[in-house]
Image 1: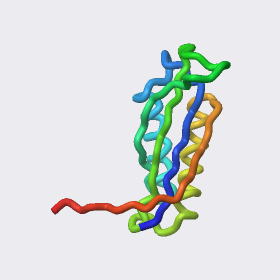
Image 2: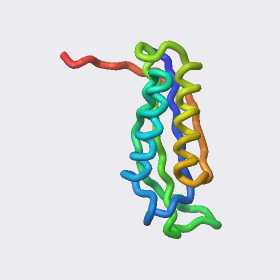
Image 3: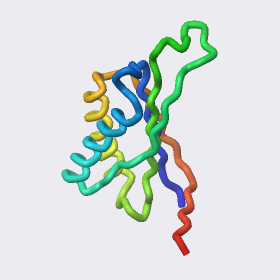
Image 4: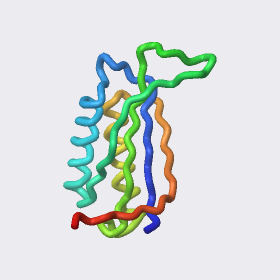
Length: 117
């Protein structure tokens, strides 16, 4: 089934303060708040990375935290409802991180779920 995949990256986070568990906790709190308001849970996968290979960038004690989420079509009624809830979570998380630079990628994907047999 065709659905949407969302990938948000927060740039320039100081790893002394913003580790995967800290950012993940901020996401969880925001997601739970939005779930209580909308009934739509925004979950995802989180990872940490660094920018390399650019003249003006070096590993300078800042990191990038990326969270990937995919809308499951049979669980969420419409792409618009999911997007609205997703946007609410992003606003909360970005505020909780001190408004860092970020990028957002949205792509259509073909996903197949295999139920446990």
